[in-house]
Structures are given as structure tokens and as C-alpha cells.
Length: 95
Image (cartoon, rainbow, N blue to C red):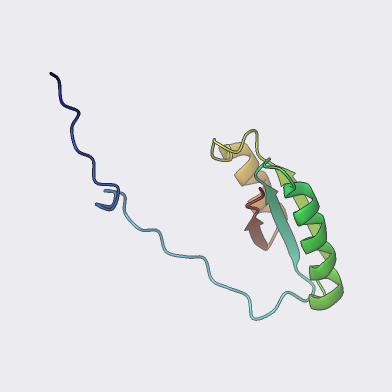
């Protein structure tokens, strides 16, 4: 009988940790990017968040972009496009 090897999901990965980007003091006048992960209700959630950011925090503009598929990371072109256009980015976690 062939035994499957034991894999410990709590062991952690070998990837280096990345430093977080500097956070702005507030969002007033900023362009905020919202990245839709393509899961159910993601678009509705982001629309609601975008409206709230404009109304409550004075965000100048909201840019919404959509990943190709929820199981894949956003491609480099999409990330580069957003990085050139927005000052703050938020990734959605729909459904």
C-alpha cells in the first residue's frame, strides 16, 4: 500500500515577507482603485464601497478593475495600469 506524504499546512511558506506600502493620513482628494476578484457580489460590494468612500471620506475618484478569474492573481499589466492611475488600492473579497 502506497502512503501519501504528510503535508503540514501550518508550516508556512518559504517566501520572503513584503513590506506594506505607506498609508495616507486620509483619503480626501485621492484616487482609489478597487480590484474586483470576480466572485459573486464582488461588483455590488465594490460599488457600495466606492460610493461610501466618495461620500464619507472625500475620495476624488474611484477606479474599478476586474481580475480575469478569482483563482488567478491579477496579471502584471492590470497591476501596472492601476499603479499608474490610483494612489490607494483595495482588493475585493466577494462571495
